[in-house]
Image (cartoon, rainbow, N blue to C red):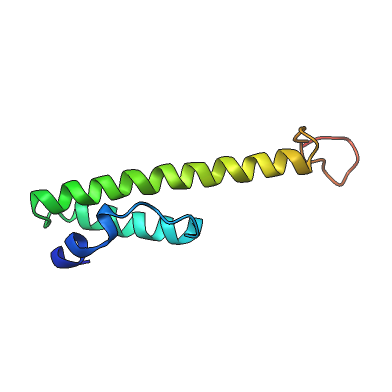
Length: 90
């Protein structure tokens, strides 16, 4: 990602509700890589940091939502995986 792409990216735009977890993680990975390269001007770095922060919050919320869905599916009790040998060992 170039300097121009980061500054013109959706840095100031909130994360869209329809954005997939995978797409958010891919964008976050690209932002981190561009910041780690150390080639961004200060303002672009701050914008990238803000966008990354929004993406992290979005991803954490998505993970929380999925965790709640799993708990509902498992009737609120996550069960350990039982081995095939019948002794209950994991």
